[in-house]
Amino acid sequence: MYPKELKYDREHEWVRMDGDVATIGISDFAQDQLGEVVYVDLPSVGDVVATGESFGEVESVKSVSELFSPVSGEIVEVNSELDDAPELVNNDSYGDGWMIKVKVDNLSEVDALMDADGYEAYLAEEA
Amino acid sequence: MRFIPVTCEERVEMLARVGARSVDELFSDIPEDARLARPLNLPEPMTEIALAAHLESLAGRNLDGGRVVSFLGAGIYDHYVPAIVDAVVSKPAFFTAYTPYQPEVSQGTLQAVYEFQSMICQLTGMEVSNASMYDGATAFAEAALMAARVTKRDKVVVSGAVHPEWRETLATYVESGTLEVVEVPATGGVTDTAAVAAVLDGRTAAVLVSSPTFYGTLEDLEAIGGIAHDAGALFVVATDPVLLGVLEPPAAYGADIVVGEGQALGNAASYGGPGLGLFACRKEHIRQMPGRVAGKTVDVDGRTGFVLTFSTREQHIRREKATSNICSNHALNALAAGVYLAAVGAEGLAGIGEACIAKAHYLEAALVATGRFKRAFDAPFAREFALRWTGDVEEMQRRLLERGFLAGVDLGRFAAADDGLVLFAVTERHTREVLDRFVEEVSAL
Image (cartoon, rainbow over all chains, first blue to last red; front, side, top):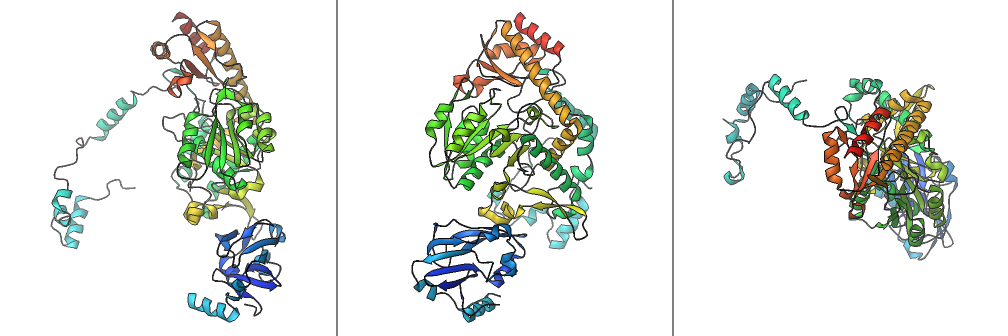
């Protein structure tokens, strides 16, 4: 449910690091809470995102929610597959359902995020 | 349905239950000086017969299209409403229903909205229509905000030939926001295209025009749309739906958003409304469109059904992130428009449009020929036109009203620059005989 190699933030995004590039998506908990995802609005490559700021929105049949960036940096890739197949967010939230890749300005921001155990404890606390 | 909310017996029972002897005692905690010490200043009760007579005498003080010949227009038009419109709209299932909060149980309402949307798309040539807005003015203002969201820019350019009240509505909308509105004055009753080009820049989200304009003239939509698109701005066109059986649809000129006042489609011309806001756009911008959309789908068993979509982006769900502060639609007025369009059909609508245009041109030429009115603008017009009166407008209108005619709209009311101009609207209800009689009365002044 919450892969050990990923980092998580309090807004339910996950981060996978490869060098200084962070791949970002939403957690299994988040996709389950949203229900069937019908649309994902993502930024453009070259846009700059800041920690805690909105980088897009995800729309399900029952709500529209903001996506918050867990890190600061420049967008180097967005998952355009989601335009035609937004359900990937539900079906494979840690794989093909990824959303953006960010070249991270400050790697210490990533260290500050929760690990899988920390995130599960956070969810238990919130429930 | 009971119309007396609380009977005397119920009042006594409720006071006894809470342990108060009177209503005064119930409110005894409210300081004396904050309480009204006298009865409300209301007239004595009336019997139903007396009340009906009283209301009839009040209504009798109004003038309506049945008692005078009206050439008033300027956004609201006196068209014939076929009997079937009221017959369908008056069905209690439509007439008494409030906005569907559990929409899928209201399949009839959703189907009616879906059919309305489909017809608006056919008329305007656009891919998507919403379920309607309050009126043309709010649809117009919403289009400006939507263009800013789509383009992520913060300025719009508005033609001075757009209805002044629509421009006022837009000004009210942007009063406390960050959107800048730049107005380009009209010249010769149409948008000054060169002036539009001069104020366009990388901040411009949209160019907004109406065709026909407030003055009834037709814009060079192709030219203005081209200028807007060259600057990366959206092109917003306000249209008159009654004329779309004759005129090219705004989509043919590259419109990105089409808005309009839909009252003329089967809705009465009433002082104060209600109006019907038409709003259509290209599919790629659907998620920035204000309002909701009724969609057609199939259920798990493959049966056709209708759903309400994009409510997720409305204010009651998204609060300050909503696409619009309008969180409803004018379903009953949209239904009337849908029934009207279905009743008259494509050929019927074209016939109505042709009749309006032909009669308007007949009247315009005849009024100019009297020598009392001068042509104000050279631009082509459709079913409404502005003429310059050679004397005092108020006096002319007063004298013609005595003879049973509402002689147009005094444009000096809206802008000092338009002093002396009178706007005439013509519909299919004006017979040749009536037009000739009006021209005779004008000649005799």
